Image (cartoon, rainbow, N blue to C red; front, top):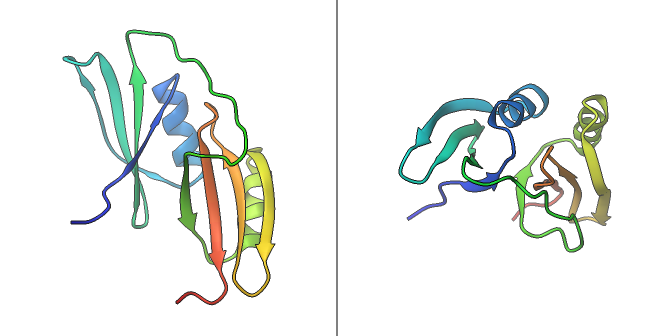
Length: 128
């Protein structure tokens, strides 16, 4: 058994795919429509991480409020926090909080996509 993916609801599939592929360097794996559920979906990959985006075609999307402790969120391990923060700022991505640090252990930053889905970058200093 292993981890497969995390899913986020989105309000507009085209805009969401553009955000993840153009700003966060995910690769679109495939997309489709589930007629039985009246949903559009897309699977995107970033290295070993995979997300599914789902747009409900029956009802309007209500953007959730972002609040501590920023759960649920999807976390991606990175190599260089400084570089990641510069990329987030360069791409005008909403930084929620951070970077934060526990000395000698980790540094992390929370940010969101266009639909207030929360993501996190984490850099481990002494990964065990």
